Length: 347
Ligand SMILES: [Zn+2]
Image (cartoon, rainbow, N blue to C red; front, side, top):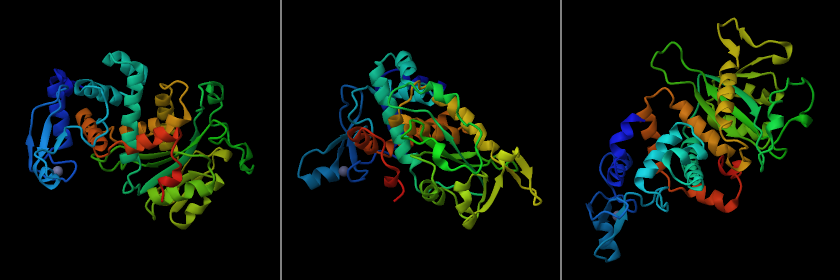
């Protein structure tokens, strides 16, 4: 976080830094995209005002004013640029709302709203990005996260990942409705032969249930066909034989890793490691609600996938994602008071 110190002196410096990240090649009008803009006096909270000349001409007005935050997630926020910059830094440290409120000296409700906006922005832009695909060697696995409308699911958490009963039908399997939404995890193994390869890239989706009909469109959208695809012997993955080189380990028979004759290691250990670290992260949000689970999971996904980069690069990549949306997802979600159905995301 050290690189933020010079920008955390006052609101103007914080606003200038955020503007530089939003428009690295110079300010353009958020309405028409023109760069024929002229700076005007600043707002009281330090944000810079600009006048867009083409927009003013089109509207027949003397000025068409926008600010650093027009058409961004921050537009309707009353929080000052300095506080936002600090909250963003704390957000990247994977803190919860209570910790952010204490560290940034803001109200806990405000901190809660901030992290929902930031996580929502990452979910909408990074998580749902249609072009992000996994390839080469991909492991898939599912796990169950206790999350309810109230925070009393601690007990069940202890029974997570009970040994799978082979051959028994899905009846006992947890669903979102039962308060334990399943998560589907897909991870592209890190290429160990390339020292510059990025971290293992992961894609995590909160599901209603783990039926084949639910996971099939997600896997088809996220994993390039032809990839080596590793799962355990659970029958919901059988369909992947058609598009992938599907290999399974039989956990039920005590097999956890195997070396195939072609030299390929067949296991799901990368994904198992990510589940452990995700659970560690989610434990910070005590009594997590189902309504917000997918937002926290999206933050974890983003920070994990950028984890190999220096702190500042990750920070600015997150900011660029967040500036590329207006917060539309979060506004719609707030009105619906529930998670958006997955069907909206995989049209
Ligand atoms: Zn304009």
